[in-house]
Figure 1: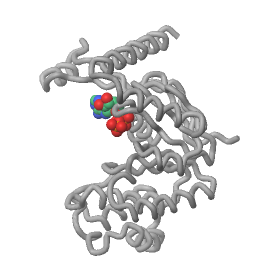
Figure 2: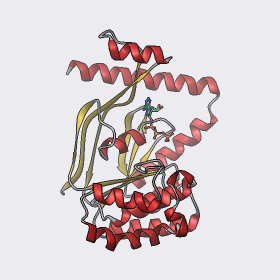
Figure 3: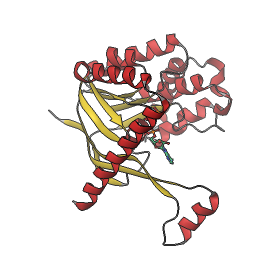
Length: 270
Ligand SMILES: Nc1ncnc2c1ncn2[C@@H]1O[C@H](COP(=O)(O)OP(=O)(O)OP(=O)(O)O)[C@@H](O)[C@H]1O
């Protein structure tokens, strides 16, 4: 089976600064200022061409970070990502310029992707039609609601016909009718054998749409397998986690962070 995505030993480190002075000192001096924070620790992930993979995990587990690294929007700190094909990421906040109108955003995005003027003229009405933005298409994007932004992002991304489509929570904002239309479009993509990654807290949508699930926890892979294997385990975990007291939740997190540090130490040793 041809691989669409091969992510090897991905680690993403962020620096957390307690104030802006620390941030500046860290830029100027060789000594390190601020606290290291690992959003991802030694993540390995592969998707075959035609897979629909759902990323699940609690808030802050690293789903969007991994999605952004695969899309080439955020650089990994260490590790490597190989992507075979054109990737398009749809996220509520991704890639739109708030000062420009919806129409200008469409044109800019298409130009950046290397479409010719002729292709742009042909594609633009389809994108505008799909977005259902009507006359708002000529208003600046900064005046749009998050649902409207998501609709524009979705309309552009699905109509440029990418090989790999990454959808990060973009269907959780906005109305149900648009989400249904978008899910239908994604099904078409799936039938065409395209690869898709779907980041969502909606397990219902995951069940309907994905074949595989990657479960992230504290920036590490907790499980990866078919929907039938992994989703019930994740649902059970969520139910059990909800029942924990605040203290127990804290202790669970501490254990997770400790495990993460051990993994990172091993990675350094190798
Ligand atoms: N630019 C950044 N600087 C510092 N920390 C960041 C940055 N971006 C993300 N993080 C941190 O990395 C961790 C992983 O974030 P990410 O958005 O990938 O999680 P997520 O699983 O998508 O969460 P959610 O379900 O809440 O959207 C979080 O703790 C987040 O605060």
